[in-house]
Length: 147
Image 1 (tube, rainbow, N blue to C red):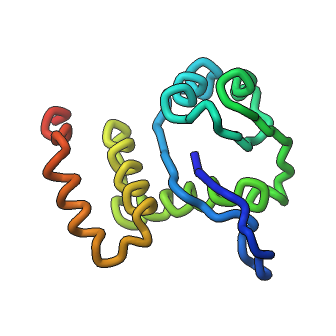
Image 2 (image 1 turned 135 degrees about the vertical axis):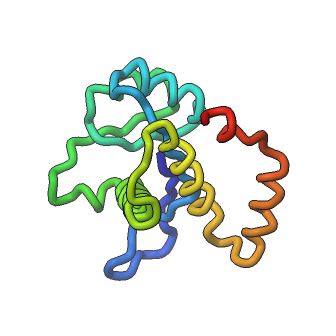
């Protein structure tokens, strides 16, 4: 999921027509409508407008949120109609392959959480380490319980 908003000024050549706010990545067991609906109920505000591809898994979105705009996306327009979703996915895949090389499925959600944490705080600059330290101290470590 990528939170995005239209850019107020006309984008220059090569720039995206929307800007991205925050992202959330979740590992799910299947692409069934029931599974995805549960995640939308949990993580998406009811006053949200969702833009998505025309997957049959998203048939109930109109009852879960304010508005659901779905469209069939031709292969040549995949990166332009939902740009931040595809950029986030490709950047996460690149990070996972470059840094970690091989990932156990049981830890994939932790790696995605790390990626989203960094992405959502990309403008914090030098304050990022201090904010991360506070988050580490305040959060219960689940890693040791999964060993």
